[in-house]
Amino acid sequence: MTVMNPAITLATTRRILTQLRHDHRTLALMIIMPSVLLTLLRYVFNDEQMFNRAAPALLAVFPFAIMFIVTSITTLRERTTATLERLMTMPLAKLDLLFGYAIAFGLIAIVQVAVATTVSVSWLGLSITGSVWLLGAIAVLDALLGAALGLFASAFARTEFQAVQFMPAFVMPQVLLCGLFSPREEMATVLDWISDVMPLSYAVDALTQVTHSTEVDGTLVKNLLIVAGCTLAALVLGAATLRRRTP
Amino acid sequence: MTNSAVVVNDLRVKRGGRDVLKGITCEIPRGTVTGLLGPSGCGKTTLMRSLVGVQIVEGGEITVLGRPAGHKDLRSRIGYATQNPAVYPDITVTEALTYFASVLRAPADDVARVINEVDLTSHADAIIGQLSGGQLSRANLAVALLGSPELLILDEPTVGLDPVLRDELWELFTGLAERGVTLLVSSHVMDEASRCAHLLLLREGELLAAHSPAELRENTGEADLERAFLRLIKDTVR
Image (cartoon, rainbow over all chains, first blue to last red; front, side, top):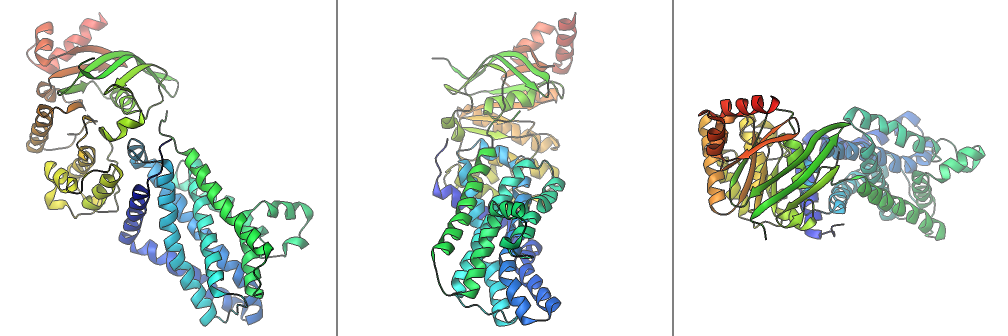
């Protein structure tokens, strides 16, 4: 296996950001969409308390879902147009490509989450007991998890049409079971188990905790480690699905 | 020590259950332009993919620049241009080439050099997706020239180009060969064959002949290479 090279990884990040820079519409959608959805939700509830209960979870869910779909389509495009094959004939490690993507989308996620958090806290009345910075950091980690899972999922799609269908398949079950609609411990045992193996559940737990308490305890650290571990695992699994030789 | 850049021995490839290459044995001499010719679907692209090391092969041996095909040391020594342009449509020519140049660790001034070599200077800052077909295939070719590779594998690089431009590119190819670069260029246009030093004629996954254009003319008694190729097919079938 070719060893990663930071210069090549960062060149890949720069190239992806350049692609996005030329695509104003996508960039605008990625950056403002979570804020728009959160604003919508605030007026749907029309009640600050209910919004305060749901918003932290959604601060994880929206960037997660948007990053999942954007990355799965972008990487699929790299696979279906011959650029991936061309890169595979060059001295680029598979992880250079994947981490290049992860860093690029991580940077976008930082902007996305910063905007969404600012809007929620200053205009929509979200009150956060813990650190706003920690909340932002966790939300970025969730967006990265979405990006990593999107990269991995793109390996199983042959067409962009299929990739879009993966969004309900990979993302929706996690959203339904993450504790947003009903607390996880109150769900049927089997559903609780399923929710236990879904990384988004831990992300939402961590965000909810930061919203309600200033304490940074073992549970929070454990939850964050699980999310980070899943992100890394998805990236490495994604690398395993890239093949230099194809039929 | 062989004087061939590429040595292929009994290469067999199956794709989708079909035998696409049925035991190809050939050599590509260093510092020459070798033409890979044959009707579409005869296995030209598969042979090229095998040399580059991205094709899963069924059997046989391929040695490229003294190493087995696909060896990681070869990745910066081979330039490969696929038939379908493999460049990012949503960025400019310069931006795309700059990226590929950094992956290849090619010198910084290489981007301007290759853009000039394929005659795209006037479109250096154009978005690739907005280029014409001919410009697009030249941008695709430019990527293969980055980093001055020792071996160039070019799949139909002149398709859809006007005669003047085609002539210029062939000048470039022969110029590169004079500087010691080995080129394998596929085409299904027989008039391009006369510009190659060697020809590999492929048909239905088998190598019909490996000659120089002069030998091909002599062996078949046909002055026109297209007719010579047809003659060769008739003689083999019989």
